[in-house]
Image (cartoon, rainbow, N blue to C red):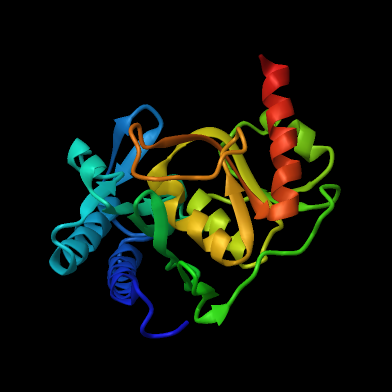
Length: 267
């Protein structure tokens, strides 16, 4: 990655924020932390909140006029009028963090006019630091990464949620090798690095879960669409997408067709 690209300062801030947050998170992982329920089946821990504070302070110190959208802060419609917005999940995979499963990630995306331009996905428990910038490629621990070139759905390694009902994936179970992985941000980053051919979810997913991962896959030569096959845009209201499908371009198109057929059968 060149050192003087357009958003190098933003990537530098994202990297620093993620590493600082990662140290704080790992100081609590498998240790003592508080847990409460924000809503049914939606826990938050003191580690989430501390990571969020660290990231927010770093971003706002360096870019005080940018918008902010985080899972752990109240949303403000003010961001919708801004060109530049940070989209953050301080710990994507909180349930995995609570269970001591090292499949969570810090996810930081920077968006300009609806499209991600900078991304960091950091799994501090595995020391896997993914980063990407628009037009600059995607990297894992500073090594360039690419999605797999697989074109056949049959036998494809598909990363899916540990908690999403598996019966939803039956059409894929019959044809693919299914591998459960916690955080969707981490799954997207793993697909970008070729550690799995693709990933998908039937859930309606928040922007902060996927913003960084979408750019990661795209910069690694892949394609990400929502369940209807539409390209992803961010800083929307509501800040959600119905379904996600990610892989290389050919495989994404095939997987999305199966996704749509499975949804139609359930109606």
